Length: 431
Image 1 (tube, rainbow, N blue to C red):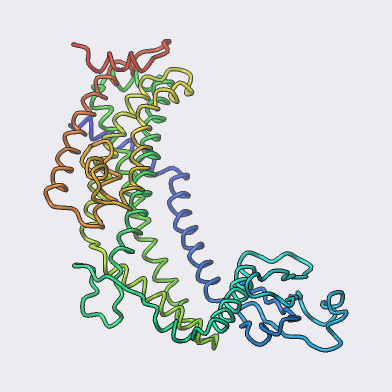
Image 2 (tube, one colour):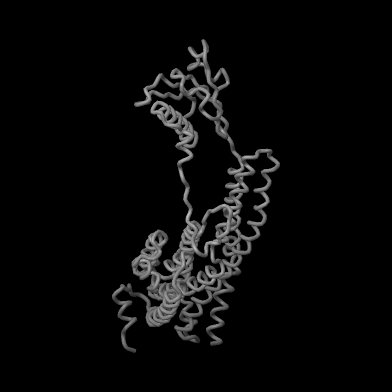
């Protein structure tokens, strides 16, 4: 046990002390905080490109009905100036010119927009949306339909679900499904990235020690099984340390950026303030709808279980690699394929959390680290969660046993290209 602990300490400290670890650990939260700050900046009205657009309306149906947007301002032009405005609109101080022909409401076409630069997708959709709305209103008037009465008939139904934290709320909105969907995507994607990234680190570490003949020195005083467990657990500690630092720095970044939202009061823009408050209220409601304690506990369990399961297999593959690291690409396919398949099943699980495929994949040890963590926000029966955890623990023990048998043969084997078939023979042969 003491020797295994020494290997764990060596693997942990040798990686934590590297400059690359410090840089990556600090850089990722900074990048995420920067992205959030940029999003808030844009949401609060930063980087605005205002455009003043002249409108020549030959139909007489649109003038005065096209509403200004946050970045688009419309001016209807009439009289003699409209004759040569198409060639001189920039001299008149306009950024663009919209010409509306005398249209047939049944088949409206012939709208033309002149500008030095093409419209971006946002302004394009805004202008066409305004034109469509005005055409629809005129069609309703022609058909004798009251637009206001039709608008009052429309309904927006929300489902209140048990446990979503919205009972008794005056707003009437249910955030349970939204919260579960977001949490499923985020936790599933994070688990997938962590398992793949740190599993590959284990494989590269084992392969490098074998190629550099360091393994020969270690094996002379430590059993191969102890050596593999020490490397797997040591790198797991690095991952947990990094993840814990990210949580702390993420919390600090969130607290630092949150005052930017109420900062809209200084802009004098009531719409921006209302939007920021609504956004903050929505985020708070979504977080309230999540079982955060249960989510965090399950995430840590499935992260550790999934990591130990896949890292042991990656270590076994690393021990079989000789001089050419490219050999590992063919050997890692049987390991990464279940992970990739589980990743795609995870997306289906978020849409149908209780389908037969989702339930099976959340119980099967090779896929449960991704699929079950995506099901948990939607609510999982306790017996399925318990069975999934038991099967994952048994799967981890079985995979470590298989990997150890491959590892103790492959770590000291040189000068031979190993196939998947030979790895299977090492795993199940009698000693």
